[in-house]
Image 1 (spheres, rainbow, N blue to C red):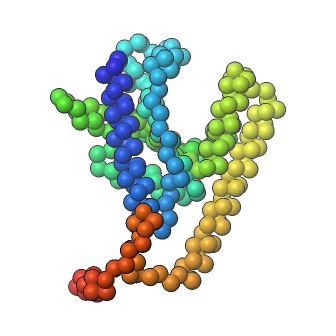
Image 2 (tube, rainbow, N blue to C red):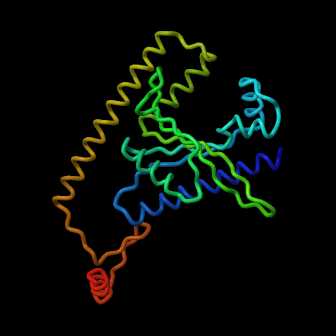
Image 3 (cartoon, rainbow, N blue to C red):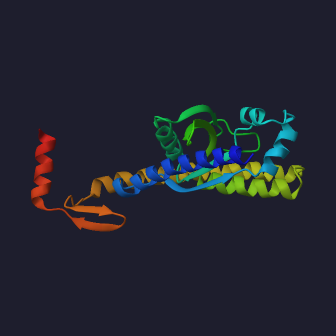
Length: 230
C-alpha cells in the first residue's frame, strides 16, 4: 500500500511541476497569466477504501487502479472560461501526458448547476527499477465556479447529502448567476484588451523577469532584429 500511494504522490508531483513551469512561463514571457492558482491533493487510504465500498468493486490494488481515477487530484482555477480551454490545450500538448477522458461540465452542466472541465490523465513516473503510468484527475474552473462548488460541497455534507429542495433550487439559481458573471467579466476583459492594444507603447529595450526590469543594450536588440529579418 505504501508503494501504491507513493506512485500517486510521484504522479501528482510530476504534473504539478509541469503546471508550475507553464504558470511561470506565462508570468515572465506573456503579459497575462491564465492560471490564478493551483491546488492538489492525494486521497487518504481511508477515503479510497470508502469509495471501494460505495462502488462495490473488488478490494485489490489492480481493481482500485482500474476503477478509481481520482486518487491524485489537481484543481486549476482560472480567471475566465476561455482560460480553461487554453490551459486544457496546453496540457494536451505535453508529449508525455496521455488524456484518457474529458468531461465538459461547462458546456453540459450537471442538473444542480455544477460547472467545470474534468480531465483524466495518464503520466509516466520513472522509478529506480521501472516506469509506472499513474492516473491524475484535473479539474479546471473559474473563480466563480470554484466558489460555487466549494459552497455546494459544504452544504452537501452539512445536510448529510439530503439537501432540502428549497436550498437545491437556490444553489441552481446561484450557479446561473455565477455563469452570467463569468461571461460578463470575460466580455469586459476582452474590451479592455482592445483598448490596451490601441494605446500600447511597449518599450522593447526592457526585459522583465520576476517583476524586475533589465535594460537591453541597443547592439543586442539590433542583432535580434537582423536575425529575425534573415
